[in-house]
Length: 356
Image (cartoon, rainbow, N blue to C red):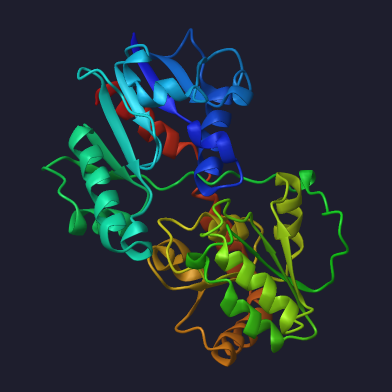
């Protein structure tokens, strides 16, 4: 029986995009993996506080041990090693181990300059050289990789992200006073998320409120964007925008369920998970058309051509009420979102575990 390791070390921060993806893997294996019927032996690489969280059918290894990060030969030997995102600090040591490497984005091309960008580029090229099978989470990401990196004739599959179906019964209202009606947005408070354009937009909507959920970057230098957002809200007296910080899963469900519309002006997304999450609830999605968002939002999202506040408002005004009046469109949007919530994603990877 093949020994397979799935790297879920991103669970160190479950509020991050990679952390949310890792969480869906853990839950899938908890509900579907059974030793007696499986064609492979499964080990999950997780932080110490996640050991045992996904049941007793799987094996666990700690990702909290820094020595294993620096000296990968301390890991047991595996037949297949799945790196669920391209930035993991862990890698297989033994040459006989087949590695599946999943790419989510190449954001460093836009966020870094000079030597920092060159160093990241070399690191990712080295990971491609080591990997046996490449997977991208969107066709946009695949095109980015093929254009900027050398795949060495290796096959690259596209497997869309799994989007966890939300149980509306779990919805729990945040402890603060929520003003209705409200718009909602979510994402780490980083420059690439482009949240600052929503501040000027909300000045044109004094009768509505915007809630932005998302954690701040821990690095002080990189946290300058979050500080700028806070200072603008304070100095410009923008009273109808509230930063929620990190919120619980149940609170996120409530916000999606009760918002009037979901706003997502992000500039760089390898997939755009929140777009599909909002569509699960039959909400109108107003999004940037950048990077993968046009692909993932498809015919059901409304896309801003630019971020001039009056233009952004005109798109919302022209479509918000009409969206809710077109019941068939709402139904089709939900059906589209559900197509990302089947087990096809994991089943495709399990095929790779057997045949890579």
